[in-house]
Every structure is written in structure tokens, then in C-alpha cells.
Image 1: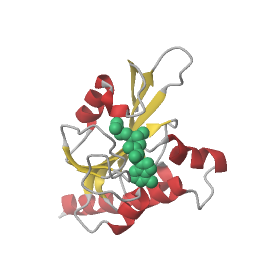
Image 2 (image 1 turned 90 degrees about the vertical axis):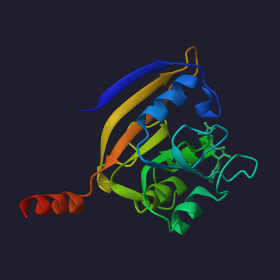
Image 3 (image 1 turned 180 degrees about the vertical axis):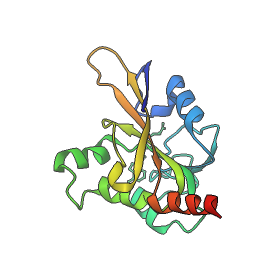
Image 4 (image 1 turned 45 degrees about the horizontal axis):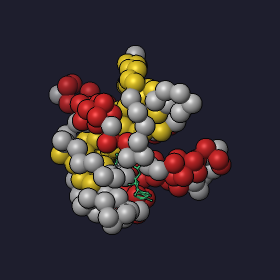
Length: 174
Ligand SMILES: C[S@@+](CC[C@H](N)C(=O)[O-])C[C@H]1O[C@@H](n2cnc3c(N)ncnc32)[C@H](O)[C@@H]1O
């Protein structure tokens, strides 16, 4: 079952500046969080912040895909994806062609996430990581900005790889 939430709030290009959005994301983050497109707003969670723009308050200033490919630290429990319009658009325009940056980014994100962890994505899609990467959608929030402004869709998908289910099943059997 997917939990659905509907929240009315203004739109801001720095998404988490809007209090209801920030509150929602802070409430839903779990454990160690990778905030990959961190922007301006520091969250009240245990976050590792990355933003390409050196003027943003972040621990790392790398391209998101480069960050994921280079990350050698412990895997995260939550990965937050709130990329800019153009980054998301690259997938929409080219219908998910293999070389689209956003598709590559989603593939790379999996290797930085603990099994059982979650990916929270802000954008225009209700399914982002998808079953193909062994994710299950748990929650969808629709942020309605009113007037002619399109809504923002936030989705929470949990990484449930078959191999880890097998492991825990085997552990129970022992
Ligand atoms: C939609 S804003 C996200 C804002 C953030 N969630 C907030 O609420 O402040 C996108 C952010 O991604 C950063 N960004 C743009 N391209 C990037 C890239 N290729 N890799 C990492 N960060 C990038 C921008 O500098 C911007 O701060």
C-alpha cells in the first residue's frame, strides 16, 4: 500500500526553504542522509551535504553523479534527490535514454544506499527508482502550489533487494 499525502504550500526554487516541505522531509528521513543536491537549507537530520555550487553550505561540491561514483564512505540510510529542473528534464526530454544523466544517477545511487534504505525524490514523477532497481514505493506526497503552478511530487521508495531478503530469511532459519 502506498501512503498518499496532499500538502498546500508556496513554491520556492530552494525547495526546503518552504516550511511544510522542510518539515515533511525531516520527518521522513531515516538514519544517515545523503542530501545530494543540498541547496541552501540545512536540515535537522544527520546529513552529508553535496552541492555543485561552491556558494552553497555543503560538505562536498561535486557533480552529483561524480559524487556517487567517488563515494567510499559508509552507505547511507536515506538519499535525498532534489535536482534542478534541467537535470530532471534531461530524462523527460529523452525518455530515459541510457545515457541520460538522471538515469545514470539513479543507477549510481543504489550502490551508496544500505539495503532497506530509502530514496526521497522531488520532481514530477511518482515512481523514480522503480521495481527495476528493486525499490518499492511507500509514500507519495503532492505539494500543491495553487494557481497555474504545477504541483511538486515527492516520492519515498525503499530499497528491498532480493539478496538481502534472502539473507534475513536465512538468518531466521538458523
Ligand atoms: C532544486 S535546488 C535544490 C535545493 C535544495 N533541496 C534546497 O531546498 O535548497 C537544486 C540544487 O542542485 C544544485 N546542483 C545543480 N546541478 C548540480 C549537479 N550536477 N550536482 C550537484 N548539485 C547540483 C544547485 O546548485 C541547487 O542548489
